[in-house]
Image (cartoon, rainbow, N blue to C red; front, side, top):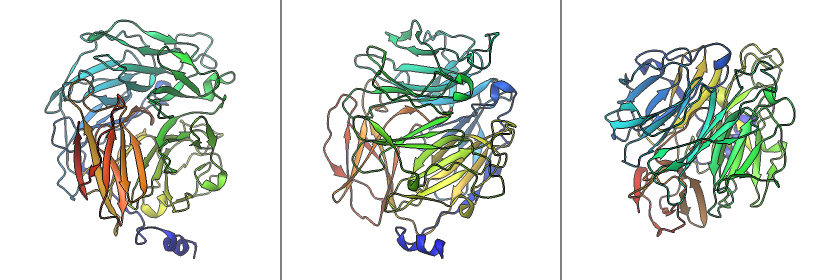
Length: 495
C-alpha cells in the first residue's frame, strides 16, 4: 500500500525507475584497487573527448592503470565502449574534465597519490601530458579533491587541489592532514602554489557562486576521521584568498559535495556525504540551514539487509532520473575498507523527490542497490535517449554501468552554453529554464562529487510540459535573451 500511495502522488505517470546492468559493454573490467592510499578516491571523469556528442569515461585505477573508455552507443540503444589509447598511469585517484587552454577540446586534471598531472586534449580522444608545459608545480601529494573556475582577466583557470593525509609526517596519520593548493595562472602557465593551511583532509571541493552575487567562493568538505578535532567544513573567498570568518563550523566525516537548486528560488542547495548522516543544507541566501530529518535525505543506515551500522556515503549526484521535473539524488555508499564501526553491506541510494519536496528510496526496486565498496559515480545520458544513466566506481570490485530503462517518463532538454574565447564551456554561467511561472536554475561548475566530475550539457526534466524557454546568465554577469527550448533534444546556447 505504501508503494501504491507514492505512485499516486508521483509525477507524471507512476514512472518507477528501472536500470539495466551493462558493465559487459566495457572492453575490460575496471577496478580501483590498492592499499591505504586508495581507501579514498576512485573517481570517474565524464567528457566528450572526440566531439561526437557522446560522453566518454576516464576511470581511476589506483594501483591499477587508469582507463579511457570511448563511447560508441547508438541513440536509445545498448551501451558500446572501446578502449581509448592513453599512456599507462598508476596512482590515479580521480580526474576532472575542463578546457584549460580554451581551444574547444576537453583537457583533464588527473589526481594522484603522487605528482598530479594536466593532460591536454588533442581531439579524437588523444591526450598529451602538459603538466610541465603549463608550469604546474607538483609535489608528492595525496590528492583527493579538485575544483576550478575562471577569474576575471585570466587566460587560464584558477585550480584548487585538495590533499588528504601528509604521508611524510612521522606522527601521522591522525591529525596529520596535509595543506591544500590553490594555483592562479601567470599568463599561459602556473608559477607557484598558494597554500591553504592548515588543511583538514579534503575529500571534496567546489567553487560556486552560491549567493548568486557574481563572486564564486571555494567550499571544502573535510574528513573528520583524520583531523579528529579542530577541523570543520570550510568556505573561502577567492580574491583575495580569505577564509570566511562568519561561516558556522560544522564538523563531519566529509566525503563528497553536490549542489543543485531544489526549492525553485534560484539558489543552490548543498548535499554533503559522510560516515553516518548525509547532510542536505538549504540555501537561505546569506546562510545554509540543515534540512529537517523528514525531508528523507539523511540516508544514515542501510535500507536493506540486516546490517544496522551507520552507512558511509561518498559521491552524491543530483539529476532528474524519470524526467518528471523533480530533481532526484543518487548517493554511492561503501565501507572505507573493513571499518568495524560502519556497515559492510552498504547499498547505494537512489532517492526520488516527490512534489512536496520529500525524498523516498527506490534503489532496490530500480535494481542498483549493490553493496560493493562504491566510490565515485556519475548520472549522465550515455546513449542519447534523454534518460540519465548511472556509472559507479568501486573499490576492489569492477566498475558498474547501468542503463536507465524507466518507462512512461516525462519530456527533457539538455542545454549546453558555449562562448567564444576564454572559458568556452562557460564555467560559472547559470542556465535558467522556464516552464510557465516555474524557473529551474543550474550552474556550470567544475568540481564536487568524490574524485570525479562531468563536462557537457546540463540535463533538465520537463514532466508533461510541451513548451519551455531558456536563458543563460554568462560568467561575467551578462544576461542572455529567453529563447525556445528544443523539446527532447540537446541544444547549444551560443553567446
